[in-house]
Image 1 (cartoon, helix red, strand yellow):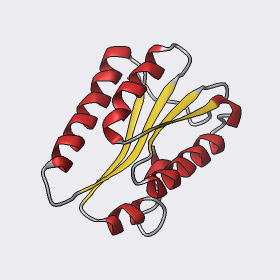
Image 2: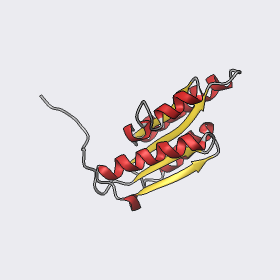
Image 3: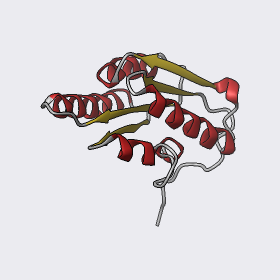
Image 4: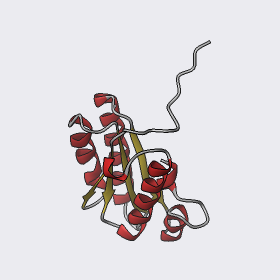
Length: 139
């Protein structure tokens, strides 16, 4: 039997993180968690690039540019989309998720989707480093 698995130690890997500025107080905690996890697993800080975009909707296009650049071994997408009173939430969540998945399939570059989709601000805060751990670290 053969097993295919990733490495726990990733020295020499170059990783890009794309973060949405909308709900930046959440995204910055997610990015901090992702950087912490990468460094703990052997990625040098100088091999991590962080790119900020205005909101979650813009994440897929920047993820695509970074993945297609040939510079990065993996890309992490981080942000927080919090449900409001209109259907805008559903549109953003669906398009961001589809866009990120399409980039991974098209480029073959591993893309981690760490964009939080929550009903409340409290849920987002919990997932960015309080009760529910830091989902950025888990990516």
